Length: 426
Image 1 (cartoon, one colour):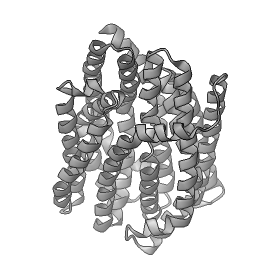
Image 2: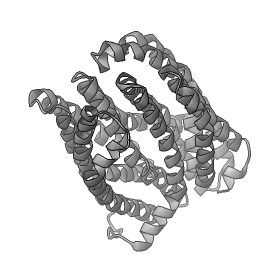
Image 3: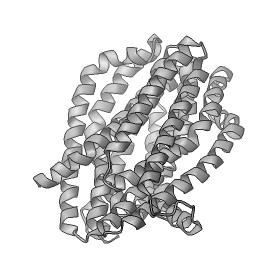
Image 4: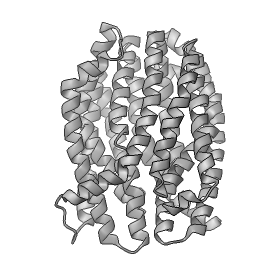
């Protein structure tokens, strides 16, 4: 078990740094934009949830690539592993261009669907249309990260994303306050940082792929898309739950929507911290099954559950202790700040449950059990609907319904799956 623990930490620690950079992008934007006023912060909430949904639906570019590459590496086929990763990069580029066009020409209609005020909608459209220019870059980063993790290289994504995060924070501060560009400056700074990361990832992968054809393959497109199809459905279910939660908060008021934006931003950051163990699980489970070692895979799953629960408890304690002061970082508005203390405390209590969910998600993705994840995701959203109705009574009830109710339903469906043996036969 000690050897498994060391391997988990070898992959999880650098993966943690790379993973938290993505929600840190959002947290930096939230903190900088939040001091421009509640209207601007509410506009960022709507735009960011649309962008996160668009990019999040394509997370299979990383999540399907990592175990696929790891299995081929485990079976001794490095050239095949690189080809699988390159197919994912080409698919990311194609889909990214399509989403860019959709964001530029359909951004206003997407924002209007939330029914926000004219002032909030104007800020949201500004951020969304500019940020759409960075979507292809973000998808290339996802695909490149999936390939490198499958090759058991968690260090390179950490370096690239760490530099990107630093550049994003500096550019946003200059553009928002130095140049006075407001929410547009935040979007422009993030787009520049995203494209810098994408170019770096592609250059690194091209160097690794010497001797392997870099040309796109139609058959590779179809294989990459098929491998991620069930994961796409699973991710759709996750995004639907978040979108429904944002829609409910929009109807409750501007301050509630602004508070939810901060809560989701914090949740995303902490979820990605816990997800570092899940990513390690994807690579290790995929490699173990590729090598035909089921006993090792079972041991990996057990240790990952332990790591996820302990990390959730530890982070929850720290978050609860910081709850009285964290609100001031994100907003100067007293009404929004008052709502954030119970939001943060609720999140802290729910984190161990989230840690359990995230590691099991990674284990099942690594095992190629995407079909079950998709079906379970759909059933979980259906089960969340009555809880969401309960959440209409107040913002606190809405947040509890999401953090405890929705995540609890996911814990139930995933926990039941790993108790059996069917997930090992994928």
